[in-house]
Image 1 (cartoon, chains in turn red, brown):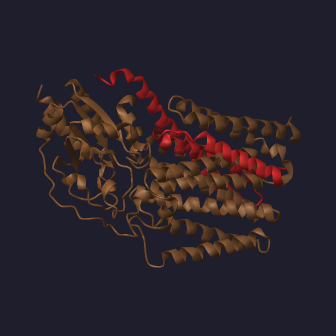
Image 2: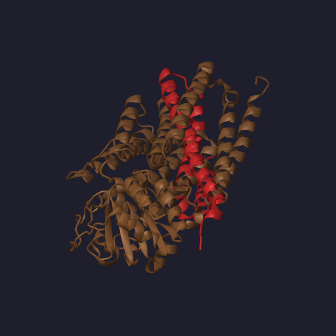
Image 3: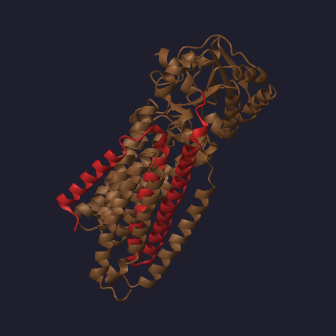
Length: 102
Length: 473
């Protein structure tokens, strides 16, 4: 069981981690990073799967199904758009030699 | 699969989640530097794939909970296929300019999923005790707000909702809704009344709150709001993680919750807005679009003259704004910049932190057009250079170059860091008409003696500039 003080410890340490990990991020990466963190909370998919696996009534199955559809959309969509944005950053780095004349 | 005992399946899931947590955190860490960013999303993606795959072992780890195991497994597979395919399709097709609302949409889906988990647990009566009840209710509330609020944010940025609905007493009504949802939430969390009716009423009011919170907020503030809802969804996921006893959800959700909060603060700061200001007052509500009126007149220039002026300049700084993104002119602008470079002109791009729709959005758009990294400078780097610049070319930017932010204390944008384009020797402004910016404030830059206005949409005007420079040979 994760409860009581253990739960609070995990919560606190994870919160510090999140804060530290992006505290020195340059402005140019704000949008991709927001998109990337949006992808990471797509982990809600795992929870939605648990809920649907355990569903016992039609109502639970319907809500669970909607939950998994939404969560899968969050995870897959979040990945695709973040990847697309970051891909372009790589391309611009390679073209560096052309820039900065004079 | 049948060979696995429940204990072994549980062990595999738990061990995999540790790896997943590691991949997520180091993935995010990598995403916060331009050099490693691309690998970062890949790491996080691998983490997500592992987490999803091992979760299929959940029915084995916890066998006796339902009599619908096979149906549920089929439903899970169909749901993942449906949601995943739809999101893959839309994510691949969306234009870079529409990225902010797309993020809002995916984020809302995550919030909705967190709320759905809570709904299943609450309807089924699985959240036992005050602590788990409270966590489930809290996650449900935040998730539902994030879901409906992100939907409104998407509608606004997509242009589906054009108005900001504001009326007298709106905040009082919002307070009443908040009080109502908290009251029902407490009733459910303490186990006093957990009937489906109570749970349903709770969700309806929570969704309503997300809508009523978001509709008064103007389009310019939407990025901050989306970022806030992103952090909230993370928090909701973490709370539901506690309810489900799922460490991967707890850690990933909390990390996103705190990282998202920091990101929200950074964005609000870059826009010179406090979070409270964004949420509880419309832009310019307190003072109205006041500020001293600007005197003088706007002086037009022909594209041919402007093109020649820049071709014979030593140094040109291009200041792109949202108007450039709307007109999809970033490729044309880069073509023009290269043309100037061939004439021996030093060209740089100056990016305001909130150029585009979100901090960093304009960098993405220019990167898409192929503009190299080292030509793009942000506010701190370039502001001193305007004084030695011959021409500052403003394309579809307005408030971020308005000098009243430095001078006029009565202006709503006073104190916002701006690009000092007005200090360059000449300023050429490409603008569709004589209208005002997002904030509705008159721009003193447009009336300066060294400013010339080139009217037209960004795409067409830059095209004319290209023709005029090309005709020089």
